[in-house]
Image 1 (cartoon, helix red, strand yellow):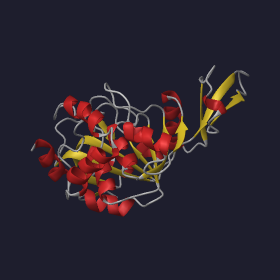
Image 2 (spheres, helix red, strand yellow):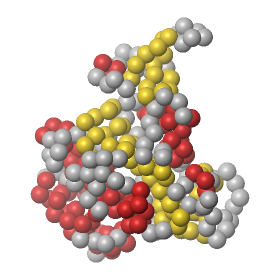
Image 3 (cartoon, one colour):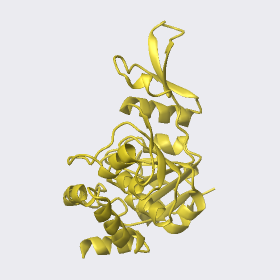
Length: 281
């Protein structure tokens, strides 16, 4: 059965509920800003947010009180510095306290792959000399039954909903994604439900190749949202807005300035299209 092609507001209303585990993935480019902001706009709370590299969009979600837990491996404003709203939540409990499940990049990838494979955990050679296992019960060790080597293991990640952004989908629901491909396929296969925003829905792909990363049967909803990854970039569609990341460092430093910016740009807008119009103006 082909996934439903629908609008983003309806997709978020249909698939996201308070208290769910939600993974919003994309590495360097194709970061689903539009979908994440729609979650904010709809006032979702109590979420466990999952992402290898939480950056500006998770800073916005955490600062707006969407999350009470974060499963991650690195957090920051790439190329700029700290995530001030994330720091405020961890250090001061504002707007609410945030539980952290910190792993390594490799452990997160292994956890996604285990989830996609229907396994309870994934194994890796890692965490030697690290103090993370002493603070995170999701990381443990076992002896390999074949080599007797000591291996690290980490619990599988199988979120309720995975959200990714891609360049194209066809009307049958197949998803084309090219450029840097991170863990999007793994997390889509691991999740119970999958929402994909795309730059455009096409009648037929111009190129038949292995960039059809997600076949239709892996996806539940497709939403056409041009510019939906901005201010990150979409390869062959638009470039990264480096200035936006630099500006966020100042916007997010104070609670008051952050809330004022979010109110005007996100909460008062009805869609990501309106958000982008306000950014440009």
